[in-house]
Every structure is written in structure tokens, then in C-alpha cells.
Length: 300
Image (cartoon, rainbow, N blue to C red; front, side):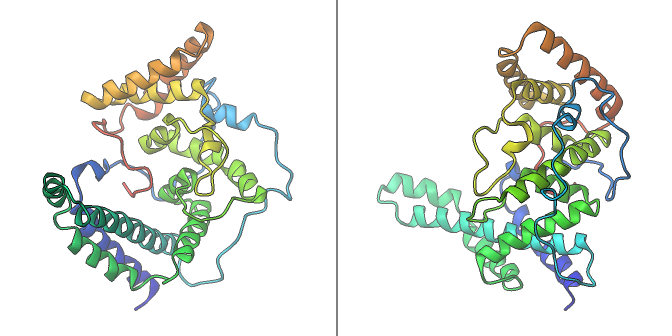
């Protein structure tokens, strides 16, 4: 079976696995171009996160060298990415399901055990389905994560919108620290990927940037490098989400916007509100409305 056919087969099987999960794990379908053309500059939206990212001092050309690369293959970067992501999701889900089954099976309190068993009903079948997917993947967990990481770099560079989001979200369980060259490369592309997502009205990027990630870059993620927990950006993104959200999710992002707002000056608030109004009208007014946060690293 070719890698391309394998990617399709594994992806289809994984969809069956994911569909069996609770509705809270489902993502909202967004209209996103597969290979977006080079976007117009979003710096015209004064005070926007892209303008801030572009204002950072440029890295030296040596530090921007792309970390790692796939060997030559007849498969496209997009196909390799989808296969690697399928393996990553199957491994991650299996680990979660097995842990929950272990907790339930080891419960000594009868009432807890009964409730727990009801919550994990069907998990055995999900684990077996994940095993079918993983049989086509590397049998070394670390290699699955490295493949997912490096394939996202390649596919993102090729213009795959979902790969760009997965890369920036940086949900990679690599079990190792990121090198300085990897952090430098992340900073060399983050503004372009954010810019492209805003220009196509992709809520997934706004959700990613609306979350507070502080502290140093951990072994498994670089996403704190995107905003660093900056209250100005957090206010902008949650305020923008509030314009496109309904119901309980709207209340949630409004509260998060207010939390960030409390740390800003009146001048900063006015500047952020101006950017939000322009961004929504120009890029998001026609995007699907949200009743829950879309899954960031998932195809629309």
C-alpha cells in the first residue's frame, strides 16, 4: 500500500475513532483555503498581533536555518503530514483511553467504579481501533512525535493551513528541549502564518492566540513564544472571538477578555478595540459563528 493510500486509510479509520468520542471534542467546520496565497499585509490593522510580531528584531540568517528535514520522497509534504498526524492522534488517544480504563478498573469504591465504567463504555473498542492505525506507524513512540513535528514544518512551509496551525500550537511530546535554532525558526515564520490565518478569517488561529501561555518554552511546546501571555494580545483575541461567538462560549470569551482588559491602560484598550473592529469587519464577518472553540490542529 502506498503512503498516500495509507494516509487516506488511516485518516478514515481515525475519524471513526474520533467520532465515537464526546461531542466536546468535535471541531467546527471552517472555510479555509488548502494552500492560501501570500496574504496581504495585516500590519494595516494598527496594533494587531502580526504588526507586533513583525516588529521583533530580525534573527541572523544562520539561526533561521530550518531545523531538520525529511529525506526525499515522491509523497507531497501534505500527505506525509496527514499520515504523521494520524499516527500522533492515534497514539495520544490510545494513551488517554488506556489510562482512564486503568483508573476505572482499579477503583475500590463501588459507586465511583460504577460511574467510571459508564464514562469509559466503548473505550476498549476505541483502543483496538487505534491499534489498527498504529500498526501502520513507527513502533517507537518518540519517532511518531518527531515525525509529526518535522512533517508539520515541511507541510506548513508548503502552505498547508492546518499544518501551520499544528506547528504554531506546538503540541509535540518530544521528550526533549527545543534547541535555539528551532526557537529561532519558529519566530521566523510565526508572523507569516498568523497573518495568513487572519486574512482568511480562520477562527482556529484566533483561539490559539487567545489563550495565555506563560513561562519558558517547555519540552513539548513552543506556543508560549507566540504571545508570551501578553495581556494586550489576549484582550484583542478574546474580544475578537466575542464578536463571532454565541451562547455560553460568548460568555466565556467575554470573561477572558475582561480579565486581560484589567491589565491595560485606556489608551491600549482603545487601540485594541479599533483593531478588533477592523479585523472582524474585514476578515471574520463572513466566517462561521462559534458556539464552542474549534479544535486548532484539525482539518476544517
